[in-house]
Image (cartoon, rainbow, N blue to C red; front, side, top):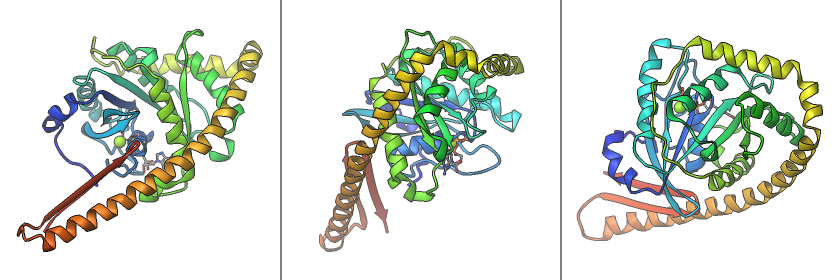
Amino acid sequence: MNQSVALEELHVQIDACQLALITIGNSGKGKTLIDNIILGDDVFTHMYRATSVTRLTEAAFTTVNGMSTVVYNVPGLREIIKANVAANKVEIAKAFARQPNQVIVVVFGVGDGGRIVQEDVATYTSIVEAFDLTRTSTVFVMNNVRPEFNTPEYQAETTLVLREAVEWPEDTPLRVVFSPSYRSRGADIYTDRDVLSFRSNLMEAITTAMPFKHVQQKDIQTSDDAIREAQARLNTIYNDMEALRTRHAEEMNDLTERIKEQTRINAENAVRYQCELDEARQQMHRAMMSAMRSSRYGGGGGNRVSASYSKGGFSCSFSLEG
Ligand SMILES: Nc1nc2c(ncn2[C@@H]2O[C@H](COP(=O)(O)OP(=O)(O)OP(=O)(O)O)[C@@H](O)[C@H]2O)c(=O)[nH]1
Ligand SMILES: [Mg+2]
C-alpha cells in the first residue's frame, strides 16, 4: 500500500500526532526500508537501485508505545546525482517543520566491510549543525551488517568507533541499533525473524529517547570539506584501534555483556511481535471479509469497502472501490 498523498494534505493529521520519527542519512542506506519496518508493511517505496528512490518527503502514521506517531520518509542528503542535493535539503527541512516531539533516527550503512564511512559521518554532522540536533533525541541505526559478523563484539567495537567519530560525550547515552542485511525480499521481510528482532530493538531505543522540537538554525552544508574532516577523524580512529580498545577495555566488556542480554530479550520480543502481526493480519482479513459481505448484501448500493485494524505498533488498512 504505497501512499502518494501530498504532505500538505496530511498537515492536520500530522499536527494531531504525539510523536514524529524522522529518519535521516544518505541515499541508498536503507532509510525507507527502516521506516517500513517501523510501520510493519511496505508503505513507502524502497528499491535496490543505482540512483535515489525517495525524492519527496512523505508521511505515514502508526502507534509507538501508545503514542500516535507520524513516520517521515525523507530523501537522503548526499547522493550520486549532485544536482538533486539542493532539493533534498528542502525536503529534509519539511520533516522538521511541524510536529514538535521529534525523535531522529540516523541511518549509517556499514555494508562496506563493517566500517563506518566518512559520508555518513559528514551528513550526520551537517544535519546536527543545521538543526541543532539534541543527542538525547537521537537514535543511530547501523544498517546492512553482514549477519554472520553481527556479534556482540562487533557491535561493542562499532559503538566505540561511532562514539569517537561523532564526538559523543562519554557521560551521554548513545543509542545505537544494528540491522543485519536481510535475505528476505518484498512483503515477506516484515515477518522475518531478524527484522522483527531489529524492530524490537529499535522501538526500545526510540521509546527511551527524549523527543525534542528542532528548529532549523541555518542551511544544511554539504561541502566536501565536511567529508575530508570526517575522513581524517575516522583515519585516526581506525589507525589507533589498539589504543582505543585498551583505553576502553572495561567499557567494551560491559557493553558486550549488555548487548548479549539485549540480544536474548530481542529474540523473545521478536516472537511476541510475530504473534501480534499474525493476529493483526487475521483480524484484518476478517474485517475485510465482513466489510465485503455487508457491501455486497447490505443494500446500500455503494461498492466501496474499507476496513482497518491496528494492534501494538502495527496498523493495517484496506479499501476497495469498484
Ligand atoms: N535485503 C536488504 N535490503 C536492504 C537492506 N537495506 C536496504 N536494503 C535495500 O536497499 C535498497 C535501498 O534501500 P532504501 O530503503 O530504498 O534506501 P534509502 O536510504 O531510502 O534511499 P533513498 O530513498 O534513495 O534516499 C532497497 O531495495 C532496500 O530494500 C538490508 O539490510 N537488507
Ligand atoms: Mg528512501
